[in-house]
Image (cartoon, rainbow, N blue to C red; front, side, top):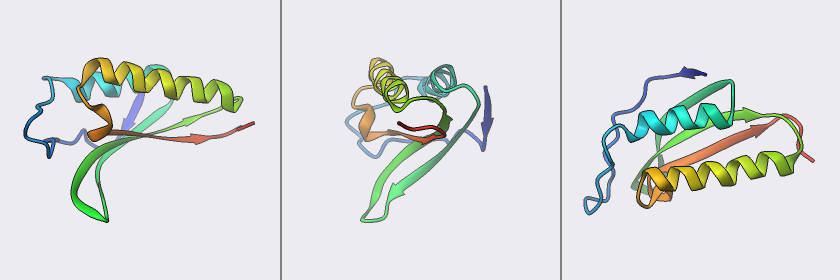
Length: 100
């Protein structure tokens, strides 16, 4: 697995929840297992809600859309095991080479 960029030092905006230690590293590794190849990641925010910050993992995938979709679903389930409320903190951006 290769990565581009630096793993952000990410502090969740929701102070009621704290991320478990090492969760970003584990999600980065998990992402590479589901989507072999380059994995880029960056902290971003919603332009309509500037206080809403999250980390986006960007990957490429090839193959039929159903197979890619299944990997995306599995990725979200696995991330949910690592972090409470993962959709508040993490996004997955998949660029499909061959979608059906």
